Length: 214
Image (cartoon, rainbow, N blue to C red; front, side, top):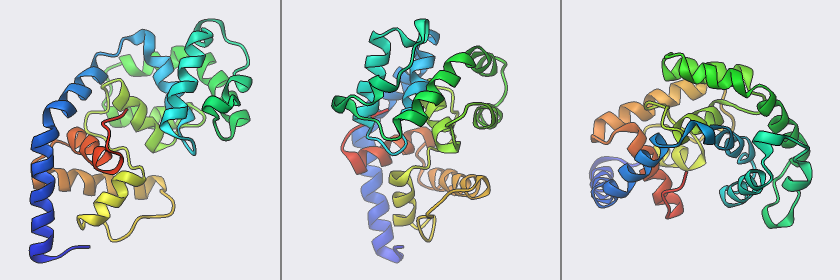
């Protein structure tokens, strides 16, 4: 945790970086908001595949699922997830999650379209879509432009919150209570430095990975 002038200097550096990347970040957020409903299932699939696997592999696996018309025709996706070109860890479990998500997707669409606040929709997703925790459910909502400031608390975000003094340490695990508490700290930090939560999320991601990825 930084103090005094060092922290002030770091914050100014962060703000300068934001001004530099603001246009690209806003363009990315606009792309999320423009995702058609027909793509929602594959965005959900992506978020089911990313835990313990790289974003690049998850992206490639989703493209393979799309090319095999998994959303429309179904089938067992396990062999697709085992492909060395985009190997997905825990592929058996995640294949089951994909099948369950496909079967229950009409209910997901209904939950997304009933006008409830984003926080309530996230709660519904966590309770009703096997394989989604708070981070993954928020990631899904962000990727379709419906997270409304909810935070994706992955390791990149948590490390930055620790760096800027919003949390004392990066927790080894996130219970619901801990997730929501840190999310409030994220929002408070966002307000403090004058960067909207959704834009700060992508800014943190880009500082860690060098990319403004989904």
